[in-house]
Every structure is written in structure tokens, then in C-alpha cells.
Image (cartoon, rainbow, N blue to C red; front, top):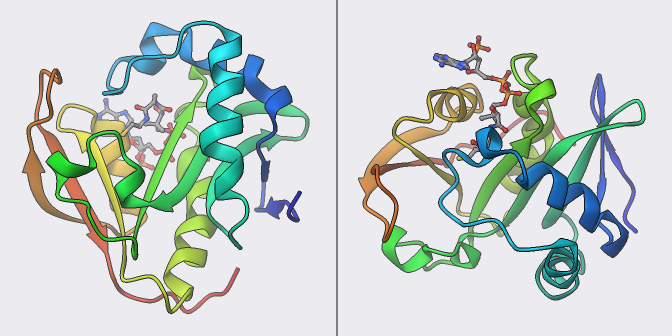
Amino acid sequence: MREPIRTERLVLRDITEADAELLFELDSDPDVMRYVSARPAVGVEAYRERTRNVYLPLQAHAWFGVYLVFERDEFLGWAFVRPAPGHLFARDLGWTREDEIEIGYRYRRAAWGRGIATEAAAPLVARALNDPATASVVACARIDNVASLRVLEKLELARTGEAVLPGVPEPVVKLARTARLIRPY
Ligand SMILES: CC(C)(COP(=O)(O)OP(=O)(O)OC[C@H]1O[C@@H](n2cnc3c(N)ncnc32)[C@H](O)[C@@H]1OP(=O)(O)O)[C@@H](O)C(=O)NCCC(=O)NCCS
């Protein structure tokens, strides 16, 4: 496991197969999944498999990955950074470049409204932008997911366009940030 990332209130650590139950429970709340384009996986075993096949390989890189976010010992949710072509709808979004790095996140309802998503994503965005191999950090959120769009705005991503994704009832807003950060993580 890589060294956890620490912020003022949070610890971000690498995901493991043993975390499948946490992922499953998080996705079991329809409010959490309300604006998420991908359908939740079915059953804990499916999350274990996804972790093994998709998430763990990302951790071979210095900073790509799905990070579980904890406040003291309480699991709040997760944030990820990975090359944008890994998105389920990468083609529809025009995300074909491996040097474009996507940021994403998902938190339990109990964690909402306290700046957690922004605080956890900030060091991931910083790591991405401080790596000379990164062209930009990108993200997308449904146009009606006001909270997520606000998080991305606070992370200084700017709107670059919209896309319509198959089976997704509202358009998604695409955002990007290319400027380098000064503060290292
Ligand atoms: C979206 C989500 C990550 C936000 O997490 P969070 O920890 O509450 O985010 P933050 O507290 O850092 O910031 C949220 C911002 O949105 C604002 N906000 C929240 N709901 C809002 C609403 N309905 N209208 C306007 N602003 C709203 C908050 O006031 C805050 O902005 P501020 O700091 O300027 O006051 C969280 O709600 C979540 O996990 N949702 C379910 C999964 C999801 O939608 N993931 C994103 C998919 S793109």
C-alpha cells in the first residue's frame, strides 16, 4: 500500500479488496446514486471483482487510484484520479487522451455539506497538476448535480462544454483545469 494522504481532517488511503462491503453499502443509497450515470454493481462480490480488476491495477502508478476517505476511523466515501479514457462513457465525452486525468468522488449522505468532497479532492488534483505528465484534470457532472458542480468549481475546474450520454436523462457538464498548482502534496 502507498502512504496515505492526510489533509486537515481526513485520511485518504488505497482501496483493498476487503473494502468491497463499504463500496456496496455506499451505492445502496438511492440518494447517493441519484446523479450517477453508471448503475451500481449487484452484490458485494461484484465490488470485490471490480476492485481487483479495475481499481487495484491503478495503484501501480505513483498517484492514480481510488482512495477511501476517513475522518478519524469513520468511512465517509471515496475519491479517485485516473486517466480519463477509463470513464465508462469516455468516447461520448471525447476523453481519449491518457494525459487527461479525471477526478471523481462519492460520499455517504451523513458526510455531505461539510466541505469533505472538496478537501479530499484537493490533494489529488494537486498531485495530478504537479506531475509534468498531466495535460489537464477533467471531470463531468450532471447539469442538475449542483453540489458536485460547486465542488469542481471550488477545485478551480472550468466548464468546457456539455455532453449527452446514453441512457442518462440530463446532459452532463464537462470541466477542466490546466493551470499548475504551487502548493505541493
Ligand atoms: C456531490 C458531493 C460529492 C458533494 O460533497 P460535499 O462534501 O457535500 O461537498 P462540499 O461540502 O465540499 O461542497 C458542496 C458545495 O455545494 C453546495 N451545494 C450543495 N447542495 C447545493 C444545492 N442544492 N444548491 C446549491 N449549492 C449546493 C454547498 O453549499 C457547497 O458549496 P459552498 O462550500 O460554496 O457552500 C456529495 O453530495 C455526494 O457524494 N453526492 C453523491 C454522489 C455524487 O453525486 N458524486 C458526484 C458525481 S459527478
